Every structure is written in C-alpha cells, then in structure tokens.
Image 1 (cartoon, helix red, strand yellow):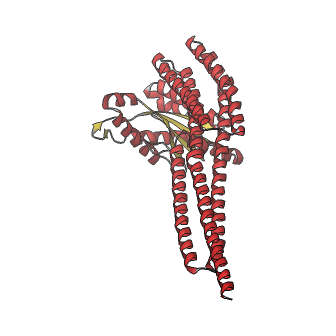
Image 2 (image 1 turned 135 degrees about the vertical axis):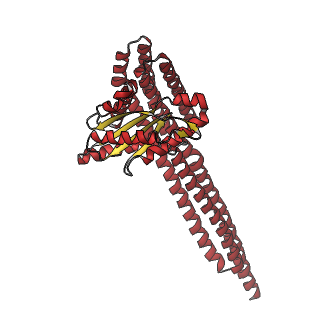
Image 3 (image 1 turned 90 degrees about the horizontal axis):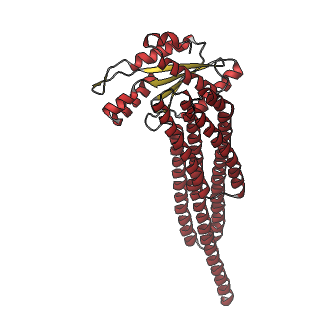
Length: 401
C-alpha cells in the first residue's frame, strides 16, 4: 500500500515537474516570439512607413522645384530651384535603396519593381523639362509639366500611398498577432497553472508570480510602442520648427475640405503666404533669428484666422491658410488684411526693429481648380503675381488673383 502511495506520489511529482517545465518552456518560447514580433513592428514596419513617407515627400518636392523653375525668371532663383530638384531626386533614390535594403517579400518586390519604369518615365520627362528651360523655351516646359510630368508624379504618389497603406496594414496585423500571441500565452499559462495548483500550491504561486512579471514587461513594451507610433505620426504630419501642419497634412485637410464642398455645394479657399525679404533677415541676423521670425509668423497667422480654419507651413518662408465655409472672394480680402495687420503689429521684434511683410495669393474652389494640386498652383501663381506687382496695387489686386 505504501509502495502504491509512493508510486502515485512520485508519478504525481513527475507530472508536476513536467507541467511546470512545460509551462516555463511555453511561456519563454511565446514571450520570445512576442518580443520578436514587437521588434518587427517597431524596427521594420515603422521604418518602412517612414522611408515611404520620406520618398513621397521628396518626389513631391522634386516636381514642385521643377514647377518653380518654370515660373522663375531670375537665373539665380532658377539655379536655386534646380539644386533643390537634384537634391530631392537624390532623396528619392536613397529612400528606395534604403527600403530595398530592409528586405522585401516577393509581393513587395513586385510592387517595388512596378515603380521602376514609372520612375524612369518621370525622370525622362523631367529631364526634357529641364532641357527646355535651359533652352529658354519656358512655355513648352510648362505645357510638358502640366500634361506629362505632373500626372506621372501623381501616379507615383498614388503608388507610394498604396505602399504606405500596405505597410500600415502589415503593422496593424503584426500588432494583432502580438496580442493574439500574448492571449495564447496567458491562457496556456493559466491552464498549466490551474493543473499545477492541484498538485502544489507553492509551485503554482511561484509560477503565477513569474507570469505576472512577464505580463508587466509585455504591457510596458506595448505602452512604449504606442508612444513611439504617436511620436512618429506627429513628426510625419507637423512642421518641427513651428508646430504647424506640414505639407502632407495640409494636402489631406484640403482634400477632405474639397470633398465636403463638392458633396454639399460649398466653397473652399486657400491663401498662399510668402514672406517678403526673409532672406535678408537670415543673411543679416543669422538663421537663429530667421527661425524665431518663422515661429512668430506661425503664431500670428494662427491668431488671425477662425477656429474652423487652419494654417500649414509648406517649407522655407512659405505658409498656406485653409479657409472653409467661405462665401466668395470678398472673404479673402478681409482675412488677408487681418493677416497683414497681424504681421506688422509690432516692428520691435525680439529687440530688433524688423518689419514682417508678406505677399499673399489666393485661390477658390471650384472657380480656380477642382482638386488640391490645382488650387495650390493657382494660389502660388497668384502670390507670385502679387509679389511682382507694385506695392500700391497689391491689396487692390489681391481679390482678383
């Protein structure tokens, strides 16, 4: 009888050890797998999303620089835009190279290869535009821009948007898999723990303490991941210096406003604000003072508009104001005057006597364009007409640009 009892006890002990060993092995394996999935989310997917976003911004800047080259009459200004054009091309190429070096699965490689001939077409057309500009055939260059270069760039941007969406979906799937792995780990551990508790309360208690420690570690990693994603989103959609919306976020807001206006028959307006003689401030007082001026201009622009409107910084000393629910062009003049008054409100700026002035162009949907790119081009062109006009006629002409 004692031998039978010892045999049962020994068997139970062996089973207990096996259960505990299985519990530990399963927990370590699953937690390691979960940690690997976390690393994929943080290091792989977010890196790819960031590279695609940078490539898309660089591609847009390349076309935008080419467009400004076509509009510029000053040779030095055209050379400046040409340098930006080349730099943006380098960023597009380096972004794609970095993305390829991260490793692509067969489906991703197929999408990546499909972009190659499109990029070649874009480079070819852009090269033709540059050659036309070099030959002083600006009208032909602009027509080629409108008919071929810009549509090709739009198609490339769409492909990049689809690629970014795929990576975001992969990131979301990876998170869901991580959560599922965590759930399986928890349930499996709980089942083993309940069975082990029937044999030994002490070992079960120690096991549950171990699981609680690992669970806290996982929750901490999840919190760090969410904070990282929020930070990446902020950096991708807002200007680092001024805190305003950047070009990408402004395009999204303008697109949504146009869709709403199209559906309900409203109007949407934008004001393109370009600071006058800002380069003189940078050259005379340094880039630190220039950054301070841009930050103050952003604050004054924000305080000059309605709560329903928004301000974005497109880059350099260029800002744009999105006006929703406008009745017509007469609304632009009042808002533009208010902006000019705000910019000139205090000539004593950071201890220096600086005058802040701006050239403002405007465009109205649907009168000046039926999509965001057309509106921005119209407002930009209006701003250049304002900047090139005489000071006495600038505000008189504003409402007609």
